[in-house]
Structure formats: structure tokens, C-alpha cells
Length: 527
Image 1 (tube, rainbow, N blue to C red):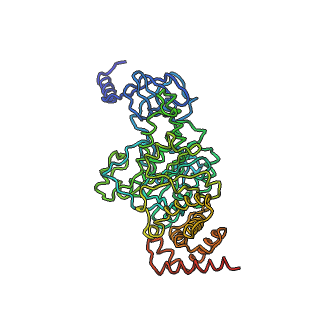
Image 2: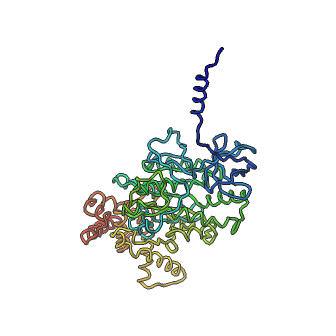
Image 3: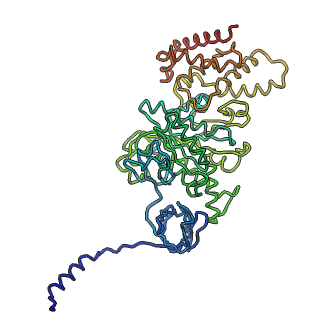
């Protein structure tokens, strides 16, 4: 058999053409040690902080510690599937989550995987980093638009604005989650009006049954149409509990940066701080006050600073700092992200490490008190130490006019009531103030899952502030509210309730309110 030189040269030429000229370089490391969701890896000298790593079996980890001879990373999957000696490769990508409009109405993990059994998340997705720099001061706008909670005592005395960070703080079982869930349910009106506030509820370290009950409540009230629930239960790894709020913030940023409004509830950051402490202790980071590492403050400040009202000017908004490449060309100004972080205190101790940290970062706090809760005054808001640093800027004009002095009046009433316990006789003015305070306090009591539209709130509070309930016994105040609102909704919705909700108030409206209030009083006090 003769070999033709032309065939040999042809075959050699074909093989040479198949050779790729560019060299593919991949950095690979080896697992040295694995323990409680944390791995130490040798050989990844060029790894970057917050970088995503991938193991042979597809499990991912995020770089946390960069040491001289090894890299500390936290696992995003089960620890038992990682063994010593396994190979790990760098992805070159920062830890991120794929976000899109298809996430609305879904229950997901912090990694964006569905948990509700409704199949894959549909629609276009955009890669959003879990941790990201907050928008700089140039790209922000002062808070000016109210975010209605539907809770009388909050909307009137501690108003929340779109783009604000308002802390909900109190002992366990004081109704902190209830305030946040009522706020989410109250956004139904904005959704129906075509200006939705997309809500993200982040459940951190809760029982699975508690989360399921919350999701059912939201579904029952039609709130899942505009809500995403991010879940990292108590059974999940410390890494997932640590990253859950960041994942919620990333979803909120997607809506904010595309010119829409979003609300994110972190329930609660105390449990995230505990998860971070757990990770830090395994990574042998030095602990500080109350065994928390000192940088937990930095962690929470970075997270909460991501809530912002973005400037309306389109040409400025487009140049926003640290913008993910996936959103290039899709940025719209005027969006907002409001944050409601929840912190649990122990025996009312607001001077503990984590509470003081978060109080100093946020734009105010709603303090819920166990004593008030046990007395049946719910929501159990302590008016004296609750504050909104945005204040009247986050209120409609009619509410500002009617409830302007309500907070001071309630604080004075509490002082006078405490004083009255020691006094035998009081002058008529003090007696009147105490009686008015009692009725106002009774009027501010509100059932869970029954948020009130802002127009109705203004009408009810007008009655309280102008002492229209003076003749009514204290036990009939709740009956007065129900009957008064029934009449107002039926007969005066277009003439009073709707204009009040739009921020208008005049003598004609107040005249109608006074007339209806008197009729209701006469009905209730007649023998």
C-alpha cells in the first residue's frame, strides 16, 4: 500500500486548523477543610471577595475570607455533599440573582429558586448582584411621597415615605410582623389604581409553618398579585439566612432602577446578625461586643442604604454608580425602594448592640411595647419614643392639617394619665384633656389585616382631634367608628372621603363630618 504525500499533508492541515490558538486558563483550588457551611480552599490565590465559586458537583459557594494561604468561602448548599480534596473553580462572577417581573407572586429561596411548586419562573431575567453599592447622593432625591400603611397610628403620627428606611422594633410577640404585613396588604389599592408598589417580604430564620401561614394570609387578601416572598427558614444554612435580605434588596433594586416603586420587609435582621455571627465564628473572625463581629454594623448599613428614592432626571439616573450591566439602557428615574427592617429586642432593651446599630442607620423607628399589647391596645405603638425623621414630608396635606398635633397630644395624655393616678382632684381642662386622650387612644386601636384607606383615616381622626366624641362612653368608641364610616362610605364617598384621600380639605367637608359625627353620637347615647 502506497501512501500519497498529498493525503498526509491534507490530513495534517485539517488537524492543525482544528487547534485553537487561544489558551483557556482556569484557576482551580482544592478543599482543605469543610465545617458547618464554611469551606477552606487552597490554590485560589487570585480569588476576589464576594466571588462565586463552583464545585465539581455543581454546588456553589461565595468567597468571604481572603487569607495568605487559603480562601474561606460559605456554601450555598448542603455541607454533607462537600468532601476534603474536592476541586473548586473560580467563575469570575460576583454572587448574583436572576430577577424579573416573573418573580411577582412567587415564593423563592435567596438564590431565586421557586419553592411554591408553581414551576419555573417565567419571563425575561436580569442578573442583579446580591451585594451592591448604594446610589450616591447625586442620584437620590428627598423623600416626598407617602407610603400609606393603612394603620391609623402610623400614618398620622409616624408617617413613612417612599424611599425611606423605617425600623420596626420591639420584643417578641408584640405585632412587629403584623404591622409589616398590614402595610403590604394596604398596597392593594395602589395596585388596583395602576401605580403598584411591588412588595418583597424576606422571612429570615422563621419556622416553615409560620412562613406558610403568612403566604396564605397575603394570598387571601389579594396581596400576592404584587408580592414576592423570599424564604430562608430556621432549617436552612447560615449562609442562606445571611444572604436572604441581600437577595430581597436586589429584587427591590430591579424595580427601583426600572422606574417603579418597591417595598422590602426584612423579618428580621436580628436573625440575620445571628447567622452572620455563626459564619464569622467558624471563619475565626474576631468577635466584639455581645460576640458579634464589629463589621455587622457595616453589613447592615450597606444593606439599608440601598433603600432610596431615585432622582427623576433621566440623564442623571442613567449614570447611577455601580449599575449592573444587565440594566444598561433600561434605567428609568423616579423609582423608589422603601425598607422596613424588623429588629427583635430582649426585655425592651433598645440599648443592645444590634438595636442601637440599626436605629442609628434608619430614618426613624416604630417602637412596639409589650405592656400596650397586653392591654389590648394594638398596634402597640409607643408614641413617645417612636419617630419618623421624614415626618410631615411623607403625609398628604389633609392628614398633616388634621393630625399635626396628634403625636404631641398623645404624649401629653400619657404623662397626664400617669400624673392623675396620684392626684385626687383635677381642674376641668386637665380632665377634658385626659378624657379626649382616652377616646383618641381607643380610636387608634385597629384590628389586624384591616388596613384603612387614608381618606377614612383623616375623617375619623378629625372627629378625635375636634373632640366630637366627648359625649360617647369609652366602650362605645369602636361602635362609633364603625357606624360613622358606614354612613360616610354610603353617603359622602365622592364629596368627602375621595377629596380627603387626594389631600384636599375645606369647611364644607368638615361641616359634613361634624354633622354625621353628631348624628352617630345621638344614636349611640340615646337611652
